[in-house]
Structure formats: structure tokens, C-alpha cells
Image 1 (cartoon, rainbow, N blue to C red):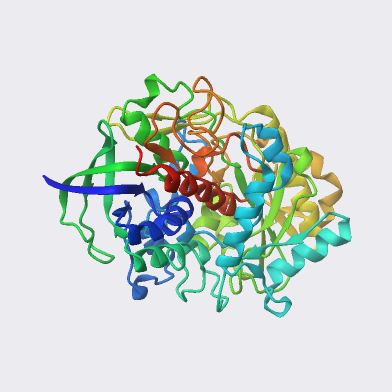
Image 2 (cartoon, one colour; image 1 turned 60 degrees about the horizontal axis):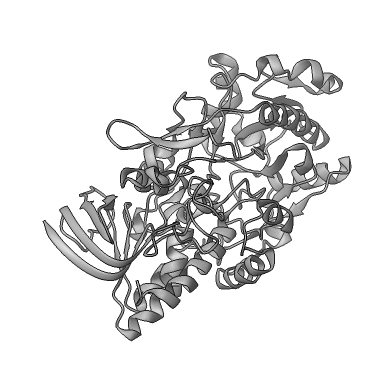
Length: 497
């Protein structure tokens, strides 16, 4: 077994791990040895092919279809140099003040998160897409929301030189999206941080001792370390593997005995995809896929966003099989899409656990308020489609495969709670949060407001698992702000622990 010694080891290279690495990189000039251990591959530029099933297999855990234990929801999260920042659309919102106050974490303020978020918004070239570059899928949503009197806003996105390929969720083939693989990780490496790819950390053994294995892959650049088992020692360990794998790693490492909240209070923004068919072709899968959102119904428990997915994901989100399904897919160039997100409450029994092999399993039960929010969101989305000019709408909880335009006054009878059955409809999520929640006490939280694990001064968490409850927005920029806080704490203490 090969052995390595560092001062600081960061596990994961996504929004949290990448930001922490960049912020800590100046310590290399003081002699600090810093490494990022990333489970996924580092792709060469030519390997971003844009082919849907190929890229899903290369960049996502289980090709983007990790199931919850009862198989009623799929979870999508990335595994790559850059983590999920490689495979998301680049939307970069600052968290509102309301949820931060609601969390009530001592020592955590919205003003502090706002200041840190602004730094990454500037760093990642976040801006509004120029109006002339908005495609029909987005323009139709905006116009319909305004016609109906719904509040609608444009998403700020972190792109530079976007060519409108529409492949954001598959890894941008034009190097336009400014994720950590384009910004923070290269900056950290330039200052001396080592990034070890294809490296799965299996568990933490004792004080700052990590057991890891480097895997061989048929794609991506070779790992800097040889395949096989590795023992890694560090003064400080920062866990940034995401809301599923960070709590799983800490559970495998035995920390659940002293931290009863570990793995619990998982939230996910359960999501549905709806489509409206227009009588003509529209520009949909060309151009940036996600330019507008509607938070008009946030107090009723859901958000609406524009989206556009390619054939495989679209097909699996349409209910049913057979001729109707096939015919709608053949008319994909006419489809307008809306993504609905339920704002789910953090419940202690929604959690990450381990199976017999020590791998993570997500246990998630849909509460009645979440199901009601999903039901209402489908009716509102159908109204938006028809206001945008669609001639028919497919809703997952529809009594019919397609609801015709002349039936739009009967949505309450045509989109029903009876048809909204988890397991029957395709519910997914990519906004995974919780499991290592911040708080004041080890009785009901895992870390303090600076991400330090309660009772373990050398161990930190710096990712979306820190969220005490639902963020009510895409969590990307907030994760970076959290990681920025963690890096500040580590800079002040790394020599002492």
C-alpha cells in the first residue's frame, strides 16, 4: 500500500471542494501540502462529445439515475474533476434572506453569505444572457408568465463564450461553462495544490488517516497516482463529496455513534418535467436551456424553471408507453418544457444510510405538502403552456396522456391527486442538500456554522450537505459561500490541530 502525507486534504472537487481548494491554495507558498482527492475522472477536451448516454455514463453516478431506496425518485449528481459543476446549467442565484433566517444557525448570517456569494459571482463571470440569444423555449415561458401575471425573472448564468449548444447537463463541449473545473481548480493547481482523480476515499481511520483506492478507467486522463490502495495522512480533512457521499463517508467512518443527526434531514427539491406541444417547430434544444424562473408560487411550495432535456431524459419523464409516447417524441422539435421544483421540508427520516457493502442509500418519503405542491405546479405549468400558444400538454398526473387546448378550463378534473402516485410518475432531483447539517449542538446537527464537525477539530464539511433545510433556490453559489467560510476557518487553525 502506498502512503502519502499532506497538511490539508479535500475530498471532492465540486462547488465546495473546488472553492475550498482555491481559497487554501495560497498556503502552499507557506509550505503547506494540499491535495484534492476526486473520485471521478478528468476528461480531455475532445472527450466532451455531447452524446447523451455516453456523457451521462462518464460524468454522473449511475448515469444520472441513482434511485432512492423505494425507487420513487431518481437523483442526479456528478462524478468528475469539477464534480456537479461540470453537469449543471450554470444558473447562479444568491440565496434569499428568508431561508437563512429560518435556519437559525448561531453564527451564520445572510449578510456574510451574501458577501461571499458576490465574490464567486464575480469570479465565475455570472451575468444575464443577452436577449438576442434567448431561444423560443425560454421566450415563450417568459411571455406567458407575464401574460398571466406571474412573477418571472431571468437566471444569471456563469458562462463565457457560450455557443448555444444546449448541452450544459452533459458537460459543455465548448468550455464555456465556468465551473470549478474551469476556474477554481486550475487556479489552485497553479499555486501548488495537487488534484488526484479517479480516487475514491473509502473511510477515515482515526485522526486524519484516510484509506483510498485509485481506480482505472477507459476514459479520461490517467490519475497522478497508480491504481490500487493508498493510505493518506493529513492534519486537516475537508469532506466535500456532496449530500449523498459526504454523510455516507462519515457514517462508514463510525461518526454516526456520536452524531445522531448524521445522514438525516436530507432535502432534494423533488422535480417533474412537463411538456407542451406547439403547432410549429420552436427553437428549444439549441441555445441555453435554462434562462428564466418563476418564484411566484414559492409560498405555495414550488418553483418553475425553463429547461430542455435531450431524448433519453425526456422519454423517461413522459408517462406511459406505446404509440402516443412515440408520436410525441417524434415531435420533439415542437416541445416547450418546464421543470417544477417542490420546496421540501427537512425531515429527520429523509436521510442517507448505508447498505451492507457500506454504500449510500437514500431513504426519502414524499410528505403530503410536497405532493400537493407538485400537483398544483402541474396545473400552473399547463396554464403557462396554453398561454404560450401550446395546442396540447402532457402532465405526469394527467388523466389523459395529452390535455388538449380546448380542455384548459378543466385542469382540476384532468390533473388529479389520484394519478399523482410516487413510483408511477417520474420524479427526479439534482438539488441534493442536508445530511451533515449545520447547527449549535451535536444532538441535532453535524457541524458548527463554520463547517467543523462537532467534537472533531481537524475534520470539516464543505458542500451542500451542510444545509440545515431547503435552500429554496439552486444551491450552487451558496455552497461556494459555505466553502469559503470553511477555508477561512482552516486557514486560521491548520497549524494548531
